[in-house]
Image (tube, rainbow, N blue to C red; front, side, top):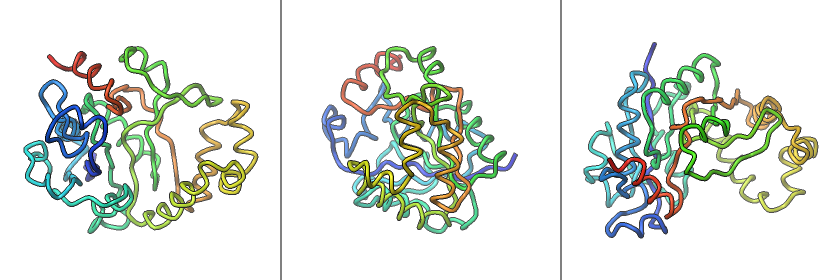
Length: 252
């Protein structure tokens, strides 16, 4: 099995989570069980034989932070997430699959990473997004709340791993800008996705395969949702109350 490269997005400014730890540039550097979240994420990627090089994207002021020591390279972040993503992907081969990880995955491990990477490569996708069915999360981490989307296939949440090819970035950027402008307008959303998609979701008849097909058409690329079974892929620290829960679970 050939290895792929990975990017960890640890950019952005201070927020309510980072406010819990004086000196933390952003929530990626908040410690869980004494170990910064971004370090836990990098360790999870490093544990997988599927991952080769790891590029961490972080505020320039944090470039020498010990939490980033296990990254192969550290690059500066941008004002927006997509700018940070472009920074991380600069220089990568256009057609190479790159794994993009959020920086707040306290339980990420080799099992979760291997499952995701293997599924992406097996399906030969251009863009892939990890998702997790509710039953897997509740069996592993029932104390952590999540937001669930009710699909025809079941209830799912998004995961913290994405895979994409560098050549898709320009189209992804255009689509994300359009989505941002349309997110509060049903008419604009319908213009992007189509009334049929919105109606199916509203009556809980939207299947994951329908979403994959429409996203592939919109981006002009092979897009797929990876249905993961390891709950570690979707356990993130997004709110101040999540920090206490994570410390209770992973504090040793």
